[in-house]
Length: 290
Image 1 (tube, rainbow, N blue to C red):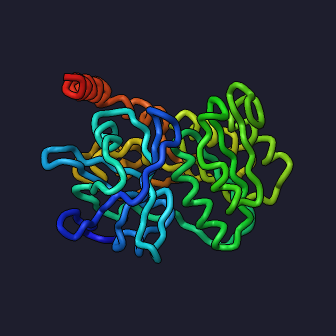
Image 2: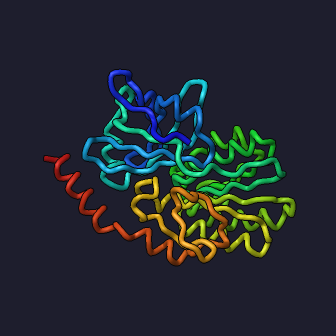
Image 3: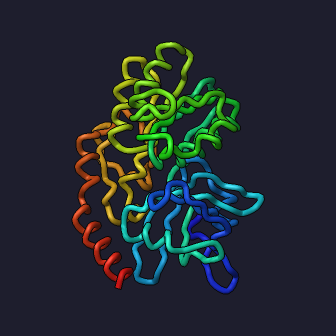
């Protein structure tokens, strides 16, 4: 883990070498030149970035890393001021500050069949974990879901490193019509050899994953990256109860055993800054339009 990441400036560090729109006006990905971070990044790690001198710090999970090229891949949902500002940058621009890799990496070992479940932009973070398990020699089954096929992320990428990719969409436009957890439950019923399930996505989805796997007795991990704010344990906003103890998702996670997470408390904390975030976004839009 690095105490600080690469800095932009005269050397052109943290340069955006590729930008791709995944869902218009909603989700984009960036490949960033960050050789020090790329050399140390592991599945489950994240970075913290800052775009302006007075800007906030936001954590984003590393979706992939190429140590040979010195590149990392991030995927972001445009949902607040900072991600909206990030989306105004293009190829050739640089990120002011980039710190990482942070967080504890996913505990990956060769153990057999691992099911990776992803929803929304969580599929991007899940991709790095699935890839790590594939490289470790595990049989990887990727289960991904979205509201419709045009909102589904990373299916082609996952097909390259998964033994099977199972899809669900709410409207039935691709794969199973219904919830991703329905696909997961059916798979667990037919494969008693599953050794681990890893869920990354919206908190309600991860909570549902935990309920589905409980009767099967399969070890289940969930990533609480969505609750993080400053990413280094200073703000305390990612405090959550796991196994009856207060922990910080950013420095003690972001992955925890699903059966031990207090999801009721977690759901409440997700909305802690909602009003401030809405006000900040409104002001950003006003300035952008003026």
